[in-house]
Each structure stands twice: as C-alpha cells, then as structure tokens.
Image 1 (cartoon, rainbow, N blue to C red):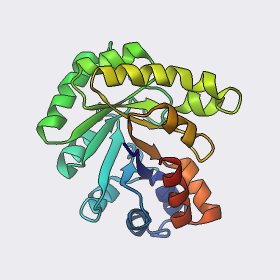
Image 2: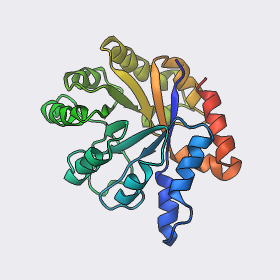
Image 3: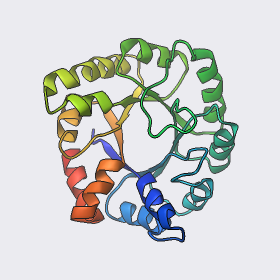
Image 4: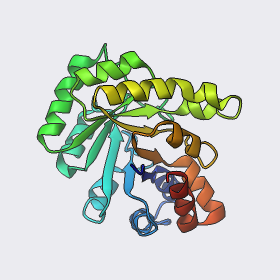
Amino acid sequence: MATKLSVNINKIATLRNSRGGNVPDLLKFAKDCERCGAQGITVHPRPDERHIRYRDVFDLKPLLTTEFNIEGNPKEKRFVDLVMQVRPAQVTLVPDELGQLTSNHGWDTVTHKDYLKEIIAQFKEAGIRTSIFVDADEKMIEGAKETNTDRVELYTESYAKNYSNNKEQAIHPFIIAAKRASELKLGINAGHDLSLENLKCFTTCIPDLFEVSIGHALISDALYFGIENTIQLYLRQLK
C-alpha cells in the first residue's frame, strides 16, 4: 500500500496574511500542489484565522480534485459548522487550545470518549471520514476505537525530535501503537514535523500507513527546491 501525501498549506496562508492582499495565491498554490502530485490538501483553520481563514476553506472546496482534509478542534462550534457545510473527505479532530501556536498533544480518548463518540457520529452521518489526533500510546489507540472513528493520526513530534539521536528508539512507540491500531481495524495517518530526513524510516516501519500530512518542512524545502521538485522528493520517500 502506497502512503498518500497530503500537503498542509497553512504556511502559505501565513505568508499571504503577513502583507495582506493575495500574494501568494493560496488557491493557485493548492491546485499547483495537486498538479505536482500531491494526493491531498490539508488545512487547519484556527479561531483567530492567523493563517487559514474560514473563507479559504469554502473557496478551496470546489477547486480541489484530491482529498480535502480539515483539521481542528470540534469543541469550537464555528469549526463544526464549517466542516458540516464544506463536507470534506476527512476531518481530523485536534485538541488545540485557544491561541495555541501549533498542535502539541493528542486527545485523551479515554477521558473524552463520550464527547468524541457524539461528535464523530455527527460527522460520519454527513458522510465525512473521521480521524483523531493521538499520541503513540496503546491506551489512546484503544480509546479511539471506542469512539467509532475511522482513523487515528499519530502525532509524530517526539519521533522527529529524537530521530537524529536514536532512530530505533524514536520509532519504537509508533510501531507498537500502529500495530495496535491495525489489530483494531483503525486506519492510520501521521503528521507533525515529518520531513525528508525522517519520512522514509517512518513509512518503512509503519507499513499500514494510509496518509501523512506535511506542511512546515515541505513548504520550507520548497523555498530551495521549488514546489514541484519538493513534492516529488517527498513522494519518493513514500514509495
């Protein structure tokens, strides 16, 4: 099974917003990512709209031909309303706090099981595939299964942080978590700080990986290599 690449375009929106106007053109960039081989587009709108704006999400939906993945905290009613109106291929539930710089932890799927089960049922009834952002912890995987989610997204910051010191130690908890997810028939996604340096090892060790969502590293690499070359470089790591 070939792992799909979903490009997170938040950083393009950050650059655009820094000067106002529409340079770079977020919609054109998303289409170019698809043209260059990306198999999905990810956005993570936050309440302060400091990067992706809610209007962007509506504008992107009719343009995209690959899978559209919207990330965010479903405890924000505006986010839930957005997802229900746009109807993306996938919604990824992330437990961000208000004003949080970037995602830095997964859901406690045991403590929040009832809430997650309720909101997931709402999304699935609308025909939207659901994924829960979780740490590489067997208990959190087992808790996710109880919510009736379709997939989990493994939060890979710890893997990326420790990769250069000891890659075997860094990947070990993710192998265990992914194995448990597969046993429970949960689809597996992954994301956060994955890069050209560490992606091949991760995808090799997690053979049942459906999708990776990559933004910061990929957009940074594109400053040097261009977006077309960069996407091809990432796709090679996923083969």
